Image (tube, rainbow, N blue to C red; front, side, top):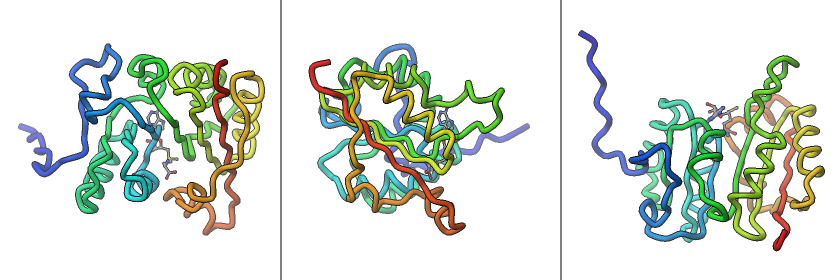
Length: 206
Ligand SMILES: C[S@@+](CC[C@H](N)C(=O)[O-])C[C@H]1O[C@@H](n2cnc3c(N)ncnc32)[C@H](O)[C@@H]1O
């Protein structure tokens, strides 16, 4: 009989919602409702861990679909002693659409989302007009979306869908964020592949 591997008892950062069909109540998760920031497709957590350490005043939720990666981030979070990070294993599109209330998040970070380079797979890309619509819905006034990719054509798509929206304006990415490299970014840069950054601010009152 297959044995189910027990989760480590010292797990501190993981968060399992009781209800996958109701929007998350931040008060229950963090004890406060703002400022909350999320990362979609957190990978091994290289961004989240550093960002959480540098910004203890923020509450961060990392979204990742792979359990092994969630566990890895959780181990790192436990080691570094950070207390302002939670993790959720879920599909990012579903999470955005169904688990976030309106105006409930200060920033959305998406770094090196899967580029789906084949034409027939491009419908699977996370950053599209639906993503822009959901960001407008969930962001607090003047909230930000931070994007990075190594894929030039996907970067063009990101810029186009945000430029098509009257609700967002392009901004330079703050140096304090640029200096936090993700694992994928470090890998690309070491191979001499340039990485692209873009930041969009929700125009208040739209
Ligand atoms: C290319 S990696 C980038 C990881 C990290 N952001 C970085 O820059 O190092 C993309 C990550 O997104 C996760 N991912 C891809 N599609 C996803 C989805 N629809 N929902 C949640 N996670 C997803 C993958 O499992 C993977 O860990």
